Amino acid sequence: MKKEDKALIINQIAETLKEYSCFYLAETAGLDAAATSDLRRECFKDGIKLMVVKNTLLHKALETLEGDYSELYPALKGSTSILFCNTGNAPAKLLKRVKKDGQTLPELKAAYVEETFYLGADQLETLSNIKSKSELIADVVALLQSPAKNVVSALTSGGTKLHGILETLSNKE
Image 1 (spheres, rainbow, N blue to C red):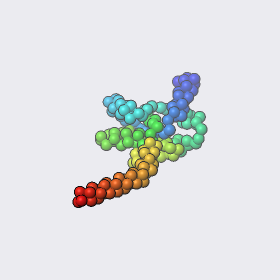
Image 2 (image 1 turned 45 degrees about the horizontal axis):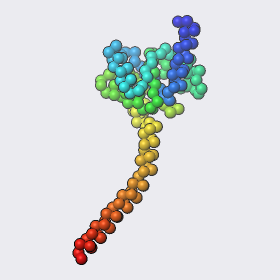
Image 3 (image 1 turned 120 degrees about the horizontal axis):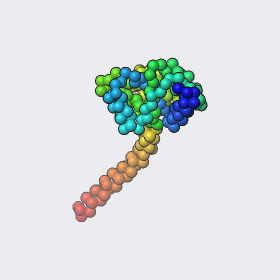
Image 4 (image 1 turned 120 degrees about the vertical axis):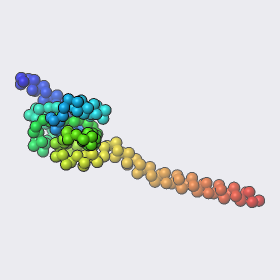
């Protein structure tokens, strides 16, 4: 491959890394064509971009970015596929779902989620339990709405009781 071609690929990888807030490195070399197609289809459904890259090109692309990605460098061995997503737990849930179907691959190598590094396949459970930004916002909104709902509920039930008492008293006379 020519040096100019490598530079273009490195720039393309770097630009893609900048577009997404998190990415996962996975081992997919042992998948046959049908399993790879299924994985790509599942990624598309979940809004995940899958890219197979050479480790040296990915290493150079990471070096061009701001920040220190040196913790990921040991994971750049063998065949590497990158799963890009803006939802931190979506690729982890996808990998768990695919592995639940009885496949041994794809295997998680490492992940970069919300400015934190996760190394090794044993981190898959942790990553799948991370709440996304929208889920956290929904939790905060629910917590903020809870006291207001309780007040409205108390006022409504009190009004209903008072109405019932007044109706009973008016029917007695």
